[in-house]
Length: 496
Image 1: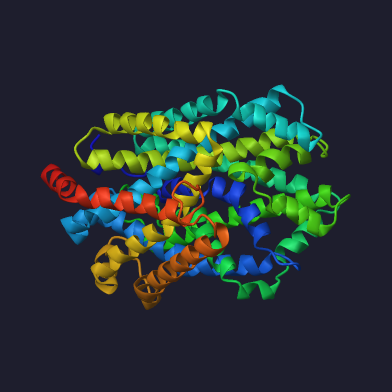
Image 2 (image 1 turned 120 degrees about the horizontal axis):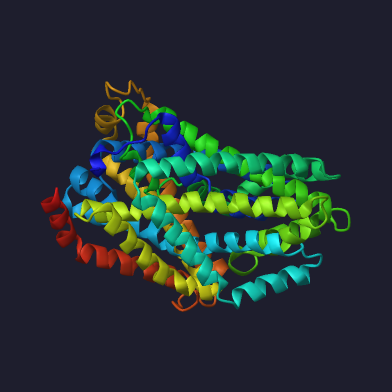
């Protein structure tokens, strides 16, 4: 079937599939830890407040833009930028795609970790001591299993994507409801633990003094980008397959609020479980210290502490297996969208879907091996390309601004077929607020990188968490894309 004739069978199928993009390890693995790290002495509620603000003034406007660009162009990232902005801007679309692809390389590795932990706890009892959980983790990392898990994750996604958008839709219609079922079951168990209310009270109690720190605003924005997938180009890719009658505004709000509801539920599960179990023997500050400790490549809470915590619950082994199954479903559904986005770039250049998918999967497997065997490398890639999502979001906004937000809205969103109506608020947010957010927070992050994260080595490109390492990789990528922009754009235009 020609890619242009493929489409989602229903709006429910579209929303579930896009939620498959948004609901991933960022919700379950990352969000509770980030909330804990940005909590004040009184609670984490102030962070949640800022996080919701950025949902409204960053994520949802960008999700609307991605839906509109993908639906109106019917092309992937590079093709959409070339068609709508002109050939000299194709490199911007390519940059957004390359950032998501770079994340895909190590995200597949993390997906493989989740697969391993399901199998491990099916075959083995839960550890009782933290030393045992660390031994499990260290043994896993020193084995061949991280590469094996990465292999099955990336090629499993390739199998799904190679069969087209209808297969992607069918798989997500299974994975996402199962994930919701698992999270609701885990929540019921967590909320019935003695002392769980202490974690929930802390999670939702605001410590307004923390709002004076720019750090909390930076963390809330980057977490929103991770949470919702806004600015990644993944929603833009799925929007290619929207029906003409599908409404962009409604879909965007359903995507944003549906995704953040899952993040909130995940945080409630983690906070209530940790406070209920550790709070029996540790003070609140000690419990928080454990939640804030990210561990190697942010593995601490999820892969080192949670297996121990499950051992304290009645039926803990069952709920532990369920938790990692849910995490695996979330990761796999997001990884599917990354493979589809990358493959779409090849399809737009004239490759068949099947050939594009298996080429991308093969490249991703070999490119992900360094992250599978070296946690410092994985941590560096997460650091570099996670922050780059702010640049990607800025480029998405630029694509709309260049066409005039008001005119673009009339042509791409408020169509006769969809009946969509979008207020002036979106024009203001996408034209002024989002570029300002991206610019100010990127500058603030650079300042913190130089003076807080690595003040003694910020100029060293071989320090995995230095400013120099990050900027160097960004500059190299942008330089290569600009160098080959003309050739790629011409090839795209010739194929179309």
